[in-house]
Length: 605
Ligand SMILES: Cc1ncc(C[n+]2csc(CCOP(=O)(O)OP(=O)(O)O)c2C)c(N)n1
Ligand SMILES: [Mg+2]
Image (cartoon, rainbow, N blue to C red; front, side, top):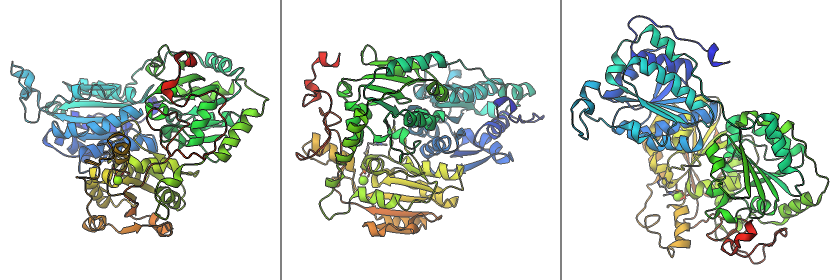
């Protein structure tokens, strides 16, 4: 269905700016708006309540609203909307909006603003505030939105809705915010406003090579490659072409790895898949990067959790060709001669790849990569002392019980590293707010997912620290009867920070262990009237944990459980902690020095 064919709500006398907002959401967005009420948005919320085609979800904190609607796009591909009041309501949205911005997720945020007649613009002095709770949210979010505007009239509102939605969903997608003063909410909306809001708003084409030109560029890049590798990123998933890219790699015997944002879109049981790369990537995937001679990067911005803080040490002897919809993500490689790239909307990459001629007869790369896969160790074995409950075992045991088609919202910290590192191949959909990585994301994300996809099993995986950042949203899950399994990995601390402190601040666990505390989670569950389960060994992880009712599952792991493997400072990604002197990995076909800092500039060309 194209936008032009979408339903157009009809104008009627007496409709207001607030009705226009509600009618627009009903026709173009996910119709349940996530919100917290307040005077400056109460008229719009009233319109949502009166409109038969819209509804609302009362969350307990606006940051949760922004995180819930982020997950709506990720799970069902519809634009989720929040509504918040001016001042603290609007500023509370910011962490969630930033998460959507960094991960290119389209969302729409509608904030109430004080009446024009009360605003600071009327007082003739540069006061901090005139109207109660008046706050310049548009300027505050200007660096984390694609489009943010305060509207002065219903006609501006109509155009902002059309424009905002179009911008959110074109090119490199992202969040938008529309700030609506109370007078505009109450003003009559005209028939023309209803026309304008549903006009198709033209957005510029992505400037880059044609499909045919890109096919030739990729062909040329790969010609003569002896050890080609592809990196499949989350951009492919957002574009809906991850499967096409994977099939092409399989058909041409090009081994491939994924970023964390990309891995969920792949069939991870296929032979060409080598794992996910990065500081917390798998040893074998990281070895593959360092051994390859040509690396084709599709829809991944190669952030520094993938390439490490010292990007020179990442694939220092390879050539890389990066395809991304955002020209800035190509430009950032600057004058580094290893990188070339093309700006291209990955929605069309399937056709491009189909037209790329590439073959190589030599078996030696596949033999080498297979031998590393067979010999390189996972590194998980020293996460905990012998006999203790390993978080890696916990992930495997829990995942074995996931119902088919599960949606898994992941948080941050060591917990998410254990989860992504040990995540096996199945048909679940695993995601996190990778770029911003705010503690507390995954509980509201799971709530958004469950409301958007009521028929699918939804699982929230979170650490004890992250859980406490949005613990109030347990009440939202209770109130809406959402059958989510909330899995809290409790190591009684900020595990990932402690591990950083072990390496960087002589093991002093200030404000990660010392000073930080966790309440009794069984009592928390009881207070919200949520059934509680405790998992302290593999045998506690039964299928009942994932039956379709709301429950809190506490996974008790040792306070000193480590993330293993992990790349430390001034180490190559193929040289991850733990450093076992007896560790075997296939020989790298390049002469690497011991440390990235020893790489001579000339070695990197
Ligand atoms: C809102 C926010 N504040 C601070 C951080 C920095 N931070 C990242 S992970 C982490 C600790 C998380 O603890 P927990 O959820 O218990 O996970 P663990 O590492 O123990 O598995 C902190 C403080 C963050 N990511 N987000
Ligand atoms: Mg913890």
